[in-house]
Amino acid sequence: MNLEARKVMSSLRQKLVVFALVMAILVPKSDAKCDFKAIFNFGDSNSDTGGFWAAFPAERPPNGMTYFKKPAGRATDGRLIIDFLAQALGLPFLSPYLQSIGSDYRHGANFATLASTVRLPHTSLFVTGVSPFSLAIQLNQMKQFKAKVDELHSSGKANLPPPNIFGKSLYTFYIGQNDFTGNLASLGINGVKQFLPELVSQIASTIKEIYALGGRTFLVLNLAPIGCYPAFLVELPHSVSDIDSSGCMISYNKAVVDYNYMLKEALKETRKDIPDANIIYADIHSVMLELFQHPSSHGILL
View 1 (cartoon, rainbow, N blue to C red):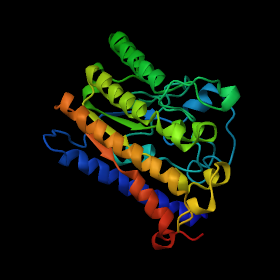
View 2 (view 1 turned 180 degrees about the vertical axis):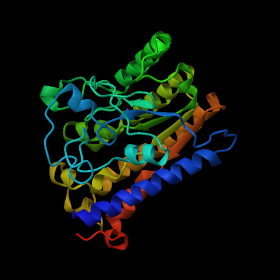
View 3 (view 1 turned 90 degrees about the horizontal axis):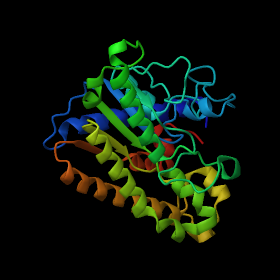
View 4 (view 1 turned 135 degrees about the horizontal axis):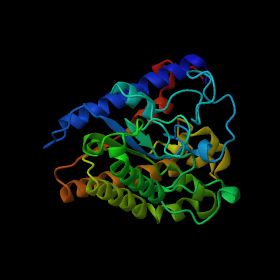
């Protein structure tokens, strides 16, 4: 993909973020405003701003080349959706929770790490490449962060937020892709489908736990059409009959659609349990699928 195409995709992602924030205001019974004081993010490489490479330093170019002009902790050559979101809210880029030097947590923290999963991994990073920082670990890090903020507030630590910030923050989730892709080769598509309910249930329970900590506004991104990703088209087994007119794998994309439906329904039920919370389901799947199906319509030249 050329530089101009990357700029177009970045612009579309930014529009998605703005749309999601507008939806936060329009959610029924919502008192949400786009005046968030901080963002706390949970996720994988799609939103990791440096956590993984803070824990396992090995980052190299071309990461960061188009915007930061150097590796900047992201598994991409530019910015991520979480970066555009922070900029749209007038907040600085999120510091990774695992980064001990140069971090500023006054406006939130990023618990995401590359290769993270929703489920607890039953393997090692050095065996299969799966991050040890699953969603449950990220939640525990969030709890520890809040406890330290409460404890150290009176000491006037300059790079920490005030204790009352947690009810004025946006909590974002972009995770689950690695639960799919990390098991497809060994379990197959039918095997992966069996634990989809577990994934959405854990995301919903995590939201409830953060709600108990004071969180009130949650933005949950669904999964993109992984059956269109070039790397997976090469790596994952499939037949010619499983390829649609856009060159995407039908069965894998259908599994993602099933997961996204389960996630949407789980969030709907979660709203009933915590009715004064604002829980927004962001459909990035449709945006990404449109890019894959009609790239030239959006200025992307292949």
